Length: 309
Image 1 (cartoon, rainbow, N blue to C red):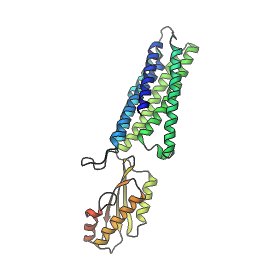
Image 2: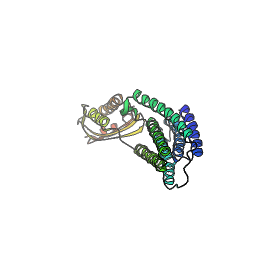
Image 3: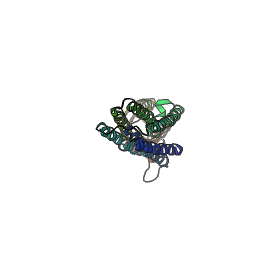
């Protein structure tokens, strides 16, 4: 990722210099896009480092949600530094009535061509990483990788729009083509920022696991001979590969307190083995039948993490 950060900074400087020399709104929009990408790389590095810290007393569920916080900041960076600036450049260019001067456009197009090759290569590497992690379903669960794919894909589209806008401006003498390209780049970045921000928000406020995984846990609980019914099942993603599971169940009547405690530990262990991401599992029993059963079920041995004793 440090290599990607350095490459983005070099590309951003090249685009900015070319944009100033050519007075090209499309090239300046792409320069802002690359600056936003560079800032996002810094955010993602922070996300990878900080989210891997182990749980502690202040954060007993770990720091997994740090990934989503930094992804949210990356989305804000794309929106403000990329989308708004590009949109401003395009709108300003629409009202430009000055003399046409295409000095520096050839150099600018060369810069964009090199950037297109670099961004395309980065996108291919990111897509290869997605395939290694299980394809678009599982591979894009990682907000950092999802942001990289969105960032690289948007960069390829943005550079292409800038090239087309500049080329048509040179060919027709109509600045509207380049202004339109800048506005399109801005709208594209705003849309990507919105999607990334919404996904990060869902995880930060406590998103449940996907319905398939939730139903698998429910069926696993129902299959236990000691459970009469599953009254409620709550899940929450606490990190990329960590899930909190809380279930309220009815046990079959007639079990003494020792038996209830053994069953609790075994069921929690069974769930943890079937769903490795379930790092915290909490069980509660309703209609237990006997007061001692409630006391045994809520004892330290029957409550805690990974069905632990």
